Amino acid sequence: MAPSAKVLDGGWGWAIVVASFMAQFLAYGSPQSMGVLYPEWLHAYQEGKGMTAWVGSLVGGVGLIASPICSACVDSFGARPVTIFSGVMVAGGLMLSAFAPNVQFLIFSYGIVVGLGCGLVYAATLTITCQYFDKRRGLALGIVTTGTSVGAFIYASAQNELIALYGLDGCLLIIGALALNLMACAGFMRPLYMPGYYLKQKAALERSTEEQLFEKPVVNDLQITAGSTVTSPEKSLTVKEMLITIDGKDVGVQTEKTGSFLSGWAIMKVIKNNQQAYSRYIHSMYEILQDQAMVAFCFAVFLFSLGAFPPVLFIEDVAQSQGLIEEVSVIPLVSIGAIASCVGKLALGGLVDIRWINSIYLYAFTMFAGGVTLLLLPLTKTYLGLQILSAVLGFFSGNWSLTSYITTQIVGLDRLTQAHGILMFFGGLGIMLGPPVVGWFFDWTQSYDLAFYFSGSCVVLGGCILTLLTLPCWNRKRAEIDRPDVHYTSNCDKVASVA
Image 1 (cartoon, rainbow, N blue to C red):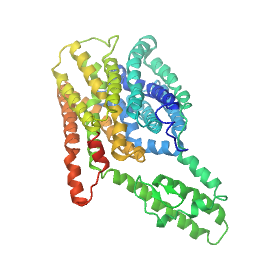
Image 2 (image 1 turned 135 degrees about the vertical axis):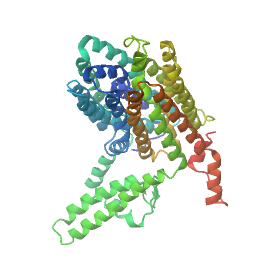
Image 3 (image 1 turned 180 degrees about the vertical axis):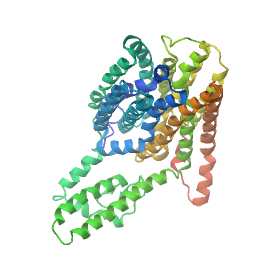
Image 4 (image 1 turned 45 degrees about the horizontal axis):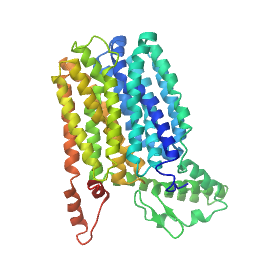
């Protein structure tokens, strides 16, 4: 099921883009506009800002922290089944939150259940979009990821009106019912590559007629490097394919050897081969983290998430606590930031496809600009100023559309799901820690000023780390040390000089 050149960058790929856009719209609409729900929960449950902030931090962070698991699910079962299952999780979590008796239950139903569902949607939509696009991958990912921003823009105003008409519980029930449409979006996600689970079953069924499939690639004689292919006269196998082949062989061996006195020895041999293959698979993740550019990018995403996500949750409460506005306006600040983020994702996604633009330095620039904007938030004493800064911060927060593109440039398409899962783990950790830290700063000082200074400093620091650790001089030094007599160009060097 390898895609041909005609399939990529067009055709059904645009149907995939539309379906993925709608999936992110339906899944992330409510979590991304939680700034409207946050004041309502503060009033309903009478808990501290730090405790209540865990709901928003978990719904944004749990799914990303679980990205390695979510990516493994997409690899094994495909984007379509994963999206269907995530629809059940998101809808069920939202409806269950309508009956939450306290914040602790809300942390589970909204924060964990909905958060995991969103993580599955995110992994599935980005993975299948990257499979269908090559030259226009940046633009396609930009369009797909704008689904979260458009969802936040529309859901912020919609939830505000639904709360006024039906109360907080009725609002969550209606939003949960809408999330069931995720299962309809999954129907369009036709796979280009047969998922690992189906390959495993096919290998087991065809073992009797194609015995040579398992005899030719001997596990102990293959030298596998993470994410690369091993070439033999008849077959090329990646680490993931080797795991699938061994699992398929496992089924055949157990069925063939049943009742034999050698069955115990055969099973032990299969277990040993499985351990070797899975250890290589884990080692491939370790090798990904040996790339200096990848490590720098992970730190940058962590610090950006730690500092830039809390304003999405607290911005409405900031306006109300400073007396700049009595209640949420017709067009909330969350909606302004969301529509600006939508524009930013499209603009940055289009820019990164230009050959002479360095994608890593473009991301670092958005971090510097976003950090300065956060540092200006405590100095703003008018509602108009908050609207402007929300728009600017939202635009540069659109750099999330660049994460998959940059990851692919650093580690290649073969390792995308593994590397993107690791990257999203760091991003989710930052999102999960950011809002409670800001809430605790407010509970301690009764002001958001110190919290936003902390957030802005984290984002600027992340931009500095990313810029310094991806300078081209690092690649030249490594090349001189490793192979002084050979001209060597690494994946990182390709990213550092996209021209």
